[in-house]
Length: 518
Image (cartoon, rainbow, N blue to C red; front, side):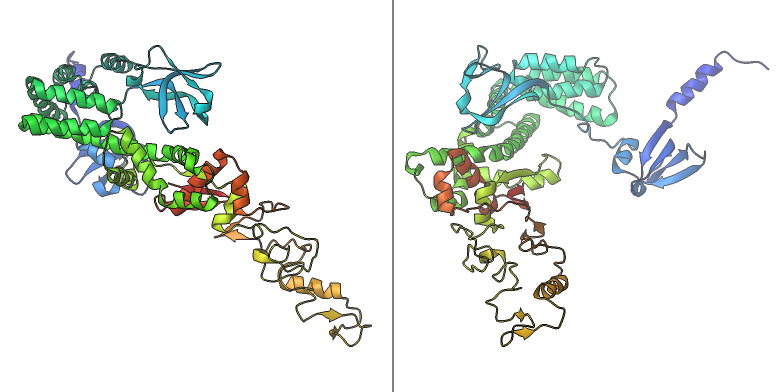
């Protein structure tokens, strides 16, 4: 039999052009995985050859993961899966005024020295201006903090080396665009178009190339776009948006340039909202501390502090962030923060559970904890029925050693020994008062407990047992506690009151004296 030398090449060519996608694991809609090969893709599904049995099954699109459908039908958005961030290792310093510094940060004898692109010679920050645990090292920060825009683009290219595909060039074009380097972005688009993009990406690149070309021709609009990017980099987002509005009003761009201006506006606007969400949480402690340090508030009573946290602290956070971003409308800042759950649902931000504490002393005063009524000392008198006594107040419905009326001389009902006549109810022979008390405890589900150690009556907040919290020998009133605690403790307490009572935060759980929220 004659074997043609060209036959292997023909076979390889056929395999290369066939629709097979070799040996992959796919996820079904019910969560299961199957292994095999995609044989043929059709309008409403695809044929899949199982590795285990060699048999073929037909799977409809509603039976598989939506991402697989997009991939097999070439329906992926060209931006999907791309990374437009350029990050570098660095450090962060959070100051007591709520501001954040990032860059190359080292400890010094007096505090910390911060170096970055705007502070090439370094700036020393005194240690007393830095929050406790406010110095964090070994984190990834935006590379533009450490270098010029052109160097950031070069660094991004080095990170992605080797660059071989149209998607990689497109990714670099978008990075250059975000840095305000529009001619460089156009160069990358040209390279992407020459690198055999798929049909969807080619359409995107062609449209993008037109936008950049028109933008570069209109130098005045381009200059304003570059300036807007610079302001956004400095986190002065409202100023950046105002510049873009000015570009539209003054030069009235149309077509591709107008589209580019609008796209840039939408991108910066989203970054603006993300910044507000992140910084709002960070600003709470600083705003509370600033209020306490104001001259007129140094001797403020606890009720004034509580009213501030509930009614005014929200406004101060809005105004603080408004000044940082160059804005003039505090309501806009609040509205942006209130979109956090919608953006989380859309996958545009990631909200994590946060925790704040009233502190062991101040917690119960607000949320009704387990401690005796404030300002009362427990006494040694087991029958004391005063609110602060061991059997009185909020710790149980009745007085006495168990808080439930057992063996209480004042409850009008008690047993007596058989030998004692004329008072109470006579006991049967062989039964002592202690035996009766034991029987009553078993009936009440308190078997095995010592006096005053009722676990079944453990105080709770909601469904949570907080009996493990220690009851101090003396519980000060809230006013006494406030007058003696430090400014730092007061600030933490104000933040906790704000989180629970101001109505801005969504509280998920009270854990001992901590509050979990988003």
